[in-house]
Length: 405
Image (cartoon, rainbow, N blue to C red):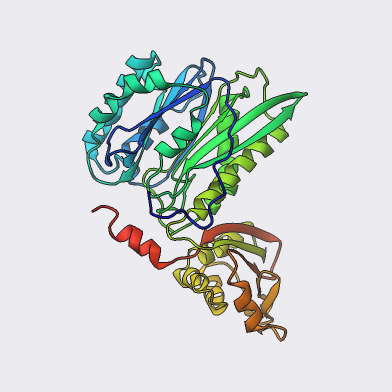
Protein backbone atom coordinates (compact mmCIF):
# COMPACT_ATOMS: atom_id res chain seq x y z
CA UNK A 1 0.00 0.00 0.00
CA UNK A 2 1.29 3.44 -0.95
CA UNK A 3 1.79 5.26 2.34
CA UNK A 4 -0.82 7.77 3.53
CA UNK A 5 -4.37 7.60 2.23
CA UNK A 6 -5.10 9.94 -0.67
CA UNK A 7 -6.57 13.27 0.46
CA UNK A 8 -9.20 12.74 -2.24
CA UNK A 9 -10.37 9.41 -0.81
CA UNK A 10 -14.01 8.93 0.22
CA UNK A 11 -14.71 8.99 3.94
CA UNK A 12 -15.19 5.22 4.10
CA UNK A 13 -15.66 2.11 2.01
CA UNK A 14 -19.33 2.04 0.98
CA UNK A 15 -21.76 -0.46 2.43
CA UNK A 16 -22.07 -2.80 -0.53
CA UNK A 17 -25.08 -5.11 -0.55
CA UNK A 18 -24.83 -8.86 -0.81
CA UNK A 19 -25.43 -9.95 -4.40
CA UNK A 20 -27.42 -13.17 -4.56
CA UNK A 21 -25.50 -15.79 -6.48
CA UNK A 22 -22.01 -14.54 -5.54
CA UNK A 23 -19.72 -15.53 -2.68
CA UNK A 24 -16.31 -14.04 -1.91
CA UNK A 25 -13.17 -14.96 -0.02
CA UNK A 26 -9.73 -13.42 0.39
CA UNK A 27 -6.45 -14.63 1.89
CA UNK A 28 -2.80 -13.73 2.34
CA UNK A 29 -0.79 -16.00 0.05
CA UNK A 30 2.53 -14.13 0.11
CA UNK A 31 2.58 -13.64 -3.66
CA UNK A 32 5.01 -10.74 -3.19
CA UNK A 33 4.47 -9.18 0.21
CA UNK A 34 4.14 -10.78 3.62
CA UNK A 35 1.23 -10.27 5.97
CA UNK A 36 -1.28 -8.71 3.59
CA UNK A 37 -4.27 -10.20 1.80
CA UNK A 38 -3.35 -10.61 -1.84
CA UNK A 39 -5.69 -13.19 -3.39
CA UNK A 40 -9.46 -13.08 -3.77
CA UNK A 41 -11.92 -15.64 -5.08
CA UNK A 42 -15.44 -14.89 -6.29
CA UNK A 43 -17.72 -17.90 -6.88
CA UNK A 44 -20.67 -17.37 -9.24
CA UNK A 45 -23.83 -19.44 -9.16
CA UNK A 46 -25.28 -21.58 -11.93
CA UNK A 47 -26.82 -19.45 -14.68
CA UNK A 48 -24.33 -16.60 -14.40
CA UNK A 49 -23.48 -14.63 -17.53
CA UNK A 50 -19.96 -13.19 -17.68
CA UNK A 51 -18.89 -10.27 -19.86
CA UNK A 52 -15.54 -8.54 -20.03
CA UNK A 53 -13.40 -5.93 -21.71
CA UNK A 54 -9.62 -5.95 -21.64
CA UNK A 55 -6.54 -3.92 -22.41
CA UNK A 56 -5.59 -3.61 -26.06
CA UNK A 57 -1.93 -3.40 -25.11
CA UNK A 58 0.19 -5.50 -27.46
CA UNK A 59 2.11 -6.74 -24.40
CA UNK A 60 -0.97 -7.75 -22.43
CA UNK A 61 -0.56 -10.36 -19.75
CA UNK A 62 -1.18 -14.11 -19.78
CA UNK A 63 -4.32 -13.80 -17.60
CA UNK A 64 -5.77 -11.17 -19.95
CA UNK A 65 -5.21 -13.37 -22.99
CA UNK A 66 -6.78 -16.33 -21.22
CA UNK A 67 -9.85 -14.32 -20.19
CA UNK A 68 -10.26 -12.96 -23.72
CA UNK A 69 -10.37 -16.50 -25.05
CA UNK A 70 -12.95 -17.61 -22.49
CA UNK A 71 -15.54 -14.83 -22.75
CA UNK A 72 -18.57 -16.26 -24.51
CA UNK A 73 -22.34 -16.49 -24.54
CA UNK A 74 -22.70 -19.47 -22.20
CA UNK A 75 -24.31 -19.11 -18.76
CA UNK A 76 -23.16 -21.42 -15.99
CA UNK A 77 -21.20 -21.50 -12.76
CA UNK A 78 -18.03 -19.45 -12.91
CA UNK A 79 -15.23 -18.06 -10.75
CA UNK A 80 -12.95 -15.03 -10.66
CA UNK A 81 -9.52 -15.56 -9.06
CA UNK A 82 -7.42 -12.41 -8.64
CA UNK A 83 -3.97 -11.87 -7.15
CA UNK A 84 -2.00 -8.71 -6.44
CA UNK A 85 1.76 -8.22 -6.17
CA UNK A 86 2.68 -9.86 -9.48
CA UNK A 87 1.05 -9.11 -12.85
CA UNK A 88 2.14 -12.32 -14.61
CA UNK A 89 2.88 -10.10 -17.61
CA UNK A 90 5.81 -10.54 -19.99
CA UNK A 91 6.46 -13.94 -18.47
CA UNK A 92 6.30 -16.02 -21.67
CA UNK A 93 5.14 -19.62 -21.58
CA UNK A 94 5.77 -19.74 -17.84
CA UNK A 95 2.97 -17.20 -17.43
CA UNK A 96 0.60 -19.30 -19.50
CA UNK A 97 1.45 -22.37 -17.42
CA UNK A 98 0.74 -20.41 -14.22
CA UNK A 99 -2.71 -19.47 -15.51
CA UNK A 100 -3.45 -23.05 -16.50
CA UNK A 101 -2.30 -24.39 -13.12
CA UNK A 102 -4.44 -21.88 -11.21
CA UNK A 103 -7.53 -22.54 -13.33
CA UNK A 104 -7.16 -26.29 -12.94
CA UNK A 105 -6.73 -25.97 -9.18
CA UNK A 106 -9.77 -23.70 -8.83
CA UNK A 107 -11.77 -26.17 -10.90
CA UNK A 108 -10.71 -29.05 -8.68
CA UNK A 109 -11.48 -27.12 -5.48
CA UNK A 110 -14.88 -25.77 -6.54
CA UNK A 111 -16.19 -28.14 -9.19
CA UNK A 112 -16.40 -25.25 -11.66
CA UNK A 113 -15.27 -25.99 -15.21
CA UNK A 114 -11.73 -24.61 -15.77
CA UNK A 115 -13.05 -22.96 -18.93
CA UNK A 116 -15.24 -20.80 -16.66
CA UNK A 117 -12.42 -19.74 -14.33
CA UNK A 118 -11.27 -16.19 -15.07
CA UNK A 119 -8.01 -15.05 -13.52
CA UNK A 120 -6.40 -11.63 -13.17
CA UNK A 121 -3.02 -10.58 -11.84
CA UNK A 122 -1.67 -7.13 -10.98
CA UNK A 123 1.70 -5.96 -9.74
CA UNK A 124 5.25 -6.08 -11.01
CA UNK A 125 5.89 -6.98 -14.65
CA UNK A 126 8.40 -9.56 -15.87
CA UNK A 127 8.69 -11.83 -12.85
CA UNK A 128 7.35 -15.42 -12.85
CA UNK A 129 4.15 -15.73 -10.84
CA UNK A 130 4.65 -18.04 -7.82
CA UNK A 131 1.33 -19.68 -8.57
CA UNK A 132 1.99 -22.54 -6.17
CA UNK A 133 1.48 -20.08 -3.30
CA UNK A 134 -1.97 -19.29 -4.66
CA UNK A 135 -2.85 -22.92 -5.32
CA UNK A 136 -1.85 -23.81 -1.75
CA UNK A 137 -4.48 -21.40 -0.43
CA UNK A 138 -7.44 -22.64 -2.45
CA UNK A 139 -8.76 -24.89 0.29
CA UNK A 140 -8.70 -21.94 2.69
CA UNK A 141 -10.37 -19.73 0.10
CA UNK A 142 -13.15 -22.23 -0.57
CA UNK A 143 -13.84 -22.64 3.14
CA UNK A 144 -14.03 -18.87 3.63
CA UNK A 145 -16.50 -18.13 0.81
CA UNK A 146 -19.40 -15.96 1.97
CA UNK A 147 -21.85 -13.50 0.38
CA UNK A 148 -20.61 -10.61 2.55
CA UNK A 149 -16.93 -10.90 1.64
CA UNK A 150 -16.77 -8.25 -1.07
CA UNK A 151 -14.88 -5.63 0.97
CA UNK A 152 -12.14 -8.14 1.75
CA UNK A 153 -11.97 -8.91 -1.97
CA UNK A 154 -11.58 -5.19 -2.75
CA UNK A 155 -8.66 -4.96 -0.33
CA UNK A 156 -6.96 -8.09 -1.65
CA UNK A 157 -6.59 -6.71 -5.17
CA UNK A 158 -4.84 -3.46 -4.13
CA UNK A 159 -1.24 -2.67 -5.09
CA UNK A 160 -0.19 0.98 -4.75
CA UNK A 161 -3.80 1.91 -4.01
CA UNK A 162 -4.26 3.83 -0.78
CA UNK A 163 -7.89 2.83 -0.32
CA UNK A 164 -10.22 0.04 -1.52
CA UNK A 165 -12.78 1.10 -4.10
CA UNK A 166 -16.43 0.10 -4.20
CA UNK A 167 -19.72 1.38 -5.60
CA UNK A 168 -23.32 0.20 -5.71
CA UNK A 169 -26.75 0.97 -7.14
CA UNK A 170 -30.22 -0.55 -6.74
CA UNK A 171 -32.52 -0.38 -9.75
CA UNK A 172 -36.27 -0.96 -9.92
CA UNK A 173 -37.47 -3.05 -12.88
CA UNK A 174 -41.18 -3.81 -13.17
CA UNK A 175 -41.62 -3.13 -9.46
CA UNK A 176 -38.78 -5.44 -8.43
CA UNK A 177 -35.30 -4.49 -7.20
CA UNK A 178 -32.04 -5.59 -8.73
CA UNK A 179 -28.69 -4.82 -7.16
CA UNK A 180 -25.38 -3.86 -8.74
CA UNK A 181 -22.10 -3.76 -6.81
CA UNK A 182 -18.57 -3.27 -8.07
CA UNK A 183 -14.99 -3.11 -6.81
CA UNK A 184 -11.87 -1.79 -8.49
CA UNK A 185 -8.17 -1.29 -8.04
CA UNK A 186 -5.99 1.25 -9.76
CA UNK A 187 -3.66 4.09 -8.85
CA UNK A 188 -0.79 4.26 -11.33
CA UNK A 189 -0.19 3.12 -14.92
CA UNK A 190 -3.66 4.50 -15.68
CA UNK A 191 -4.55 5.48 -19.23
CA UNK A 192 -7.03 2.75 -20.01
CA UNK A 193 -7.55 1.45 -23.51
CA UNK A 194 -10.68 -0.50 -22.54
CA UNK A 195 -11.25 -0.32 -18.81
CA UNK A 196 -8.98 0.38 -15.85
CA UNK A 197 -6.52 -1.70 -13.93
CA UNK A 198 -8.86 -4.30 -12.43
CA UNK A 199 -12.63 -3.97 -12.06
CA UNK A 200 -15.23 -6.56 -11.02
CA UNK A 201 -18.96 -5.83 -11.15
CA UNK A 202 -21.73 -8.11 -9.96
CA UNK A 203 -25.51 -7.98 -10.32
CA UNK A 204 -28.32 -10.31 -9.33
CA UNK A 205 -30.17 -9.37 -12.51
CA UNK A 206 -30.63 -11.81 -15.34
CA UNK A 207 -29.06 -10.52 -18.55
CA UNK A 208 -28.46 -11.86 -22.03
CA UNK A 209 -24.67 -12.31 -22.32
CA UNK A 210 -24.09 -10.85 -25.81
CA UNK A 211 -26.21 -7.83 -24.91
CA UNK A 212 -24.34 -7.44 -21.62
CA UNK A 213 -21.03 -7.60 -23.49
CA UNK A 214 -22.14 -4.83 -25.85
CA UNK A 215 -23.49 -2.70 -22.99
CA UNK A 216 -20.30 -3.08 -20.97
CA UNK A 217 -18.14 -2.01 -23.90
CA UNK A 218 -20.37 0.98 -24.65
CA UNK A 219 -20.35 2.27 -21.08
CA UNK A 220 -16.63 1.68 -20.74
CA UNK A 221 -16.01 4.22 -23.48
CA UNK A 222 -17.84 6.87 -21.43
CA UNK A 223 -16.27 5.99 -18.09
CA UNK A 224 -13.02 4.08 -17.73
CA UNK A 225 -11.75 5.08 -21.15
CA UNK A 226 -12.13 8.74 -20.13
CA UNK A 227 -9.75 8.66 -17.17
CA UNK A 228 -5.99 9.05 -16.98
CA UNK A 229 -3.46 9.36 -14.19
CA UNK A 230 -0.17 9.18 -16.04
CA UNK A 231 -0.92 8.37 -19.72
CA UNK A 232 0.43 4.81 -19.38
CA UNK A 233 -1.81 1.90 -20.41
CA UNK A 234 -1.37 -1.22 -18.30
CA UNK A 235 -0.57 -4.71 -19.56
CA UNK A 236 -3.21 -6.07 -17.20
CA UNK A 237 -6.36 -3.94 -17.61
CA UNK A 238 -9.37 -6.16 -16.99
CA UNK A 239 -13.06 -5.43 -16.41
CA UNK A 240 -15.24 -8.46 -15.70
CA UNK A 241 -18.95 -8.37 -14.99
CA UNK A 242 -21.18 -11.17 -13.79
CA UNK A 243 -24.98 -11.25 -13.95
CA UNK A 244 -26.11 -14.13 -11.75
CA UNK A 245 -29.83 -13.96 -12.56
CA UNK A 246 -30.59 -14.89 -8.94
CA UNK A 247 -33.20 -12.13 -8.58
CA UNK A 248 -35.21 -13.61 -11.44
CA UNK A 249 -35.52 -10.15 -12.99
CA UNK A 250 -34.45 -9.83 -16.63
CA UNK A 251 -32.59 -6.54 -17.18
CA UNK A 252 -31.74 -7.13 -20.83
CA UNK A 253 -32.38 -3.93 -22.76
CA UNK A 254 -33.64 -2.07 -19.69
CA UNK A 255 -32.62 1.60 -19.75
CA UNK A 256 -32.80 2.04 -15.98
CA UNK A 257 -30.46 -0.90 -15.46
CA UNK A 258 -28.03 0.51 -18.02
CA UNK A 259 -28.10 3.90 -16.27
CA UNK A 260 -27.49 2.30 -12.88
CA UNK A 261 -24.59 0.29 -14.25
CA UNK A 262 -23.10 3.45 -15.76
CA UNK A 263 -23.32 5.22 -12.40
CA UNK A 264 -21.44 2.38 -10.73
CA UNK A 265 -18.76 2.34 -13.42
CA UNK A 266 -18.31 6.11 -13.38
CA UNK A 267 -18.08 6.14 -9.59
CA UNK A 268 -15.34 3.49 -9.68
CA UNK A 269 -13.52 5.30 -12.49
CA UNK A 270 -13.52 8.54 -10.49
CA UNK A 271 -12.24 6.71 -7.41
CA UNK A 272 -9.28 5.43 -9.42
CA UNK A 273 -8.40 9.00 -10.38
CA UNK A 274 -8.87 10.18 -6.80
CA UNK A 275 -6.33 7.54 -5.78
CA UNK A 276 -3.89 8.50 -8.53
CA UNK A 277 -0.37 8.05 -7.25
CA UNK A 278 0.53 11.22 -5.35
CA UNK A 279 -2.70 12.99 -6.31
CA UNK A 280 -3.92 16.03 -4.39
CA UNK A 281 -6.39 17.40 -6.98
CA UNK A 282 -9.28 15.80 -8.87
CA UNK A 283 -9.53 17.42 -12.30
CA UNK A 284 -12.37 17.40 -14.83
CA UNK A 285 -11.59 18.50 -18.38
CA UNK A 286 -14.71 19.59 -20.31
CA UNK A 287 -14.45 20.19 -24.04
CA UNK A 288 -17.25 21.61 -26.15
CA UNK A 289 -17.69 23.29 -29.52
CA UNK A 290 -15.39 20.86 -31.33
CA UNK A 291 -15.78 19.93 -34.98
CA UNK A 292 -16.60 16.36 -33.84
CA UNK A 293 -16.81 14.29 -30.68
CA UNK A 294 -13.56 12.61 -31.71
CA UNK A 295 -11.80 15.97 -31.88
CA UNK A 296 -13.24 16.92 -28.50
CA UNK A 297 -11.84 13.71 -27.01
CA UNK A 298 -8.42 14.45 -28.53
CA UNK A 299 -8.35 17.83 -26.81
CA UNK A 300 -9.65 16.47 -23.51
CA UNK A 301 -7.09 13.67 -23.33
CA UNK A 302 -4.21 15.85 -24.56
CA UNK A 303 -4.97 18.28 -21.74
CA UNK A 304 -5.54 15.59 -19.12
CA UNK A 305 -2.29 13.82 -20.04
CA UNK A 306 -0.06 16.89 -20.27
CA UNK A 307 2.68 16.83 -17.59
CA UNK A 308 2.89 20.61 -17.89
CA UNK A 309 -0.82 21.06 -17.23
CA UNK A 310 -0.78 18.53 -14.41
CA UNK A 311 2.26 20.01 -12.65
CA UNK A 312 0.79 23.50 -12.92
CA UNK A 313 -2.33 22.19 -11.19
CA UNK A 314 -0.18 20.55 -8.50
CA UNK A 315 1.55 23.89 -7.94
CA UNK A 316 -1.82 25.69 -7.86
CA UNK A 317 -0.60 27.83 -10.75
CA UNK A 318 -3.31 29.07 -13.17
CA UNK A 319 -0.97 28.71 -16.13
CA UNK A 320 -3.60 28.73 -18.86
CA UNK A 321 -0.95 28.90 -21.58
CA UNK A 322 -0.33 25.22 -20.95
CA UNK A 323 -3.95 24.48 -21.81
CA UNK A 324 -3.51 26.43 -25.05
CA UNK A 325 -0.46 24.28 -25.73
CA UNK A 326 -2.41 21.07 -25.11
CA UNK A 327 -5.18 22.11 -27.49
CA UNK A 328 -2.65 22.91 -30.17
CA UNK A 329 -0.74 19.64 -29.89
CA UNK A 330 -3.85 17.45 -29.79
CA UNK A 331 -4.28 17.17 -33.54
CA UNK A 332 -7.85 18.42 -33.33
CA UNK A 333 -9.12 21.21 -35.56
CA UNK A 334 -8.80 24.52 -33.69
CA UNK A 335 -9.00 28.24 -34.41
CA UNK A 336 -7.13 30.61 -32.11
CA UNK A 337 -9.76 33.35 -32.44
CA UNK A 338 -12.71 31.08 -31.59
CA UNK A 339 -11.16 29.29 -28.63
CA UNK A 340 -12.22 30.05 -25.06
CA UNK A 341 -10.88 28.64 -21.78
CA UNK A 342 -12.36 28.67 -18.29
CA UNK A 343 -11.06 27.62 -14.88
CA UNK A 344 -14.27 26.84 -13.05
CA UNK A 345 -16.55 29.80 -13.80
CA UNK A 346 -13.61 32.13 -14.46
CA UNK A 347 -13.28 33.12 -18.13
CA UNK A 348 -9.56 33.01 -18.80
CA UNK A 349 -9.10 33.43 -22.54
CA UNK A 350 -11.28 34.25 -25.54
CA UNK A 351 -11.03 35.64 -29.07
CA UNK A 352 -7.37 34.78 -29.44
CA UNK A 353 -6.21 36.55 -26.27
CA UNK A 354 -6.58 36.73 -22.50
CA UNK A 355 -10.07 37.78 -21.48
CA UNK A 356 -10.38 41.44 -20.42
CA UNK A 357 -12.25 40.25 -17.31
CA UNK A 358 -9.58 37.76 -16.28
CA UNK A 359 -8.20 38.05 -12.76
CA UNK A 360 -4.99 36.13 -12.05
CA UNK A 361 -5.66 36.51 -8.33
CA UNK A 362 -9.10 34.89 -8.58
CA UNK A 363 -7.75 32.11 -10.77
CA UNK A 364 -4.92 31.40 -8.33
CA UNK A 365 -7.45 31.19 -5.49
CA UNK A 366 -9.58 28.78 -7.51
CA UNK A 367 -6.59 26.50 -8.14
CA UNK A 368 -6.16 25.96 -4.40
CA UNK A 369 -9.29 23.80 -4.30
CA UNK A 370 -9.22 19.99 -4.42
CA UNK A 371 -11.80 19.84 -7.24
CA UNK A 372 -10.73 21.62 -10.44
CA UNK A 373 -12.74 22.02 -13.66
CA UNK A 374 -11.03 23.21 -16.84
CA UNK A 375 -13.39 24.00 -19.72
CA UNK A 376 -12.36 24.47 -23.32
CA UNK A 377 -14.78 25.60 -26.03
CA UNK A 378 -13.38 25.39 -29.55
CA UNK A 379 -16.21 27.39 -31.12
CA UNK A 380 -16.33 25.21 -34.22
CA UNK A 381 -19.22 22.77 -33.89
CA UNK A 382 -21.22 20.57 -31.53
CA UNK A 383 -18.58 17.99 -30.59
CA UNK A 384 -18.06 17.46 -26.88
CA UNK A 385 -16.15 15.22 -24.50
CA UNK A 386 -15.08 14.99 -20.88
CA UNK A 387 -12.01 13.48 -19.25
CA UNK A 388 -10.95 13.07 -15.64
CA UNK A 389 -7.42 13.23 -14.32
CA UNK A 390 -5.39 14.31 -11.30
CA UNK A 391 -2.38 16.50 -10.68
CA UNK A 392 1.22 15.30 -10.95
CA UNK A 393 3.25 15.69 -7.77
CA UNK A 394 6.66 14.62 -6.51
CA UNK A 395 4.95 11.83 -4.62
CA UNK A 396 4.29 10.13 -7.96
CA UNK A 397 8.05 9.98 -8.52
CA UNK A 398 8.67 8.69 -5.00
CA UNK A 399 6.18 5.85 -5.47
CA UNK A 400 7.43 4.77 -8.89
CA UNK A 401 11.17 5.26 -8.41
CA UNK A 402 11.39 2.29 -6.06
CA UNK A 403 8.25 0.30 -6.93
CA UNK A 404 10.16 -2.76 -8.05
CA UNK A 405 12.98 -2.67 -5.50
